Image (cartoon, rainbow, N blue to C red; front, side, top):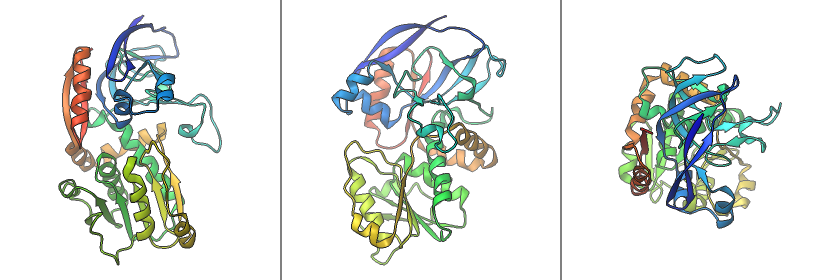
Length: 341
């Protein structure tokens, strides 16, 4: 079966390439319908990764957040036309200790191999999760980033001590908003404080107990635990501020991605006996848990609809470039491509 793949060959430049999809009893063929642009995709598109990484990774089809419809299933596990959420992490082995998303042998779409910018995608059945019919497809399109938050919260539950009166989230962007929604749904009795740079963005966190500008935090304020959802050049200041405002023996969860090494106040980490841990990507179990939350807590989907930013129908490569440029100009919210290929 001949397939068309839309690969980024250089920053800002897509080209069409063709591949042969082998139909056998081990694969499911999915036609993408809604694709969501992530910051990682933008870093490739804008050439913001190191030159040696770009040389190694490109050409490559972008996008690791998306949903689609089953076109053909050789495994017999799905029906033609079923809507599915596509899982980008593809484990090659199982480990009793290390989670699939941290195994160095695992492959990740739009990072180590082609993402979802294709006419059809051949998937393993364990990399697909059925999507409930009543879920907004524009929200479902960015399920992957939601699973990243749920994965981090589950790890928090394992690592953090049980005094959870106040938890702070640093970051008022998409990741901070998603993490906050999920955390409040899972821990309704914990006071949730949001710390950000933009007063207007903070107004969207209507479900939080308190919001603060990072330039105006009361000096006496303290949190039991904290999540860092900032990343980039703002990460050092955010992490050090968290270290200052957290109680001793608190836990700091790091989620923000930074291209450069981050300097932190290790002296105070030692003095307070803090625990810091990182979380990245997610597993099938995280996807299943998010789908379950969509169904059991419909208000989560309602809140997530607030961060649907730009939606654009994509029919040509010019439309693809337009989508990435619109996303680049949009400081908040997810850009969703309606994939009409």
